[in-house]
Image (cartoon, rainbow, N blue to C red; front, top):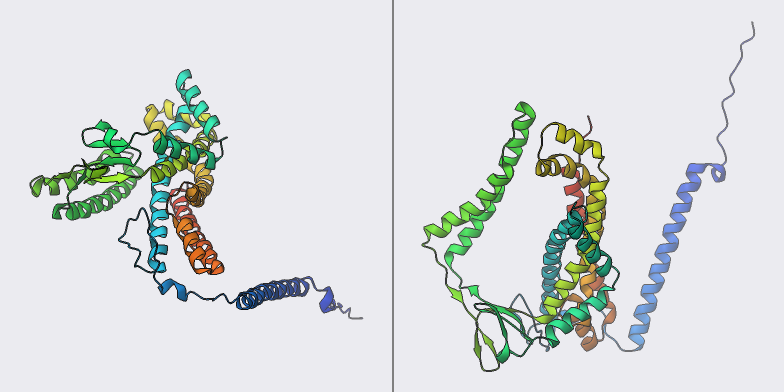
Length: 393
């Protein structure tokens, strides 16, 4: 009986093997890209040397010799360029963080208002969205800056909005508490309250899954976050002494002030970004099937409970990814502060590179900082998205 042999297929030639060709193409692409980058770096260094322009970051240790109008950290013209750069970075982070929080609140409120059954509320929210999202942000910043700087009176004729709160062309001046030891421990108590509230929320969630009984985690968390600092405040004997601003010469002394430049930048970023967040929130809620709300009503849930327990947890899957993009856009749009004179990262870096002539290093630092901030925001939002994602069973 003849034995049949099975012929094994021969291995194709290397240039015909798809895996080998794919690896070869990637190696060639990386090599070409690396050669192009090396050419650009070499050409830049040669041109800088030809024009007798120094390279490197050694200039950061030299004296800056220029003033900065607003600084959240101590700074003087005798400080280094590195210190000036840090001032710009802190200013950028400050206005971006405030802008993200306020734009989220405003956008959420306006997004819910657009879905309101009240005709007037829905139309006013729609007018806000369609008006401010279609005007370039740069024009809005100039408008708010002109309104705060040009329309407000001088300090001697300032408007007293509230007792101790004055509005003038120097900005908004308002009282602040004097530093007290109690405030540090109140901050510790507030942080501890948030941690305990988070633990209570997790316990209440497991309890509800096990027994079906709900626990007022919102009110409990609010009571912990505010109650513990209040207890510390009472324990220290209510130490509340305000540094109230008063007119001294041609300006106010005491308290603190929000400059027109900072106010215009913050208002512009919040109002502009809030329009896009409003549409994101509205779209996320509309993406949830109406049958979910009907089922919640059939179970006897009130409107607030339906939104909090049924609609929003499902809408977050649609809301969070585009919301991340808006947070990134707000942070990067803060660089437009240079057109109204607010000393952010870009403005101070421009002054630095104009004085030192080292534009490549200055621009590289700006790019690196915005890249790092964007990656951190994306990382945080991705972790939050994973935490609130609904796990299918």
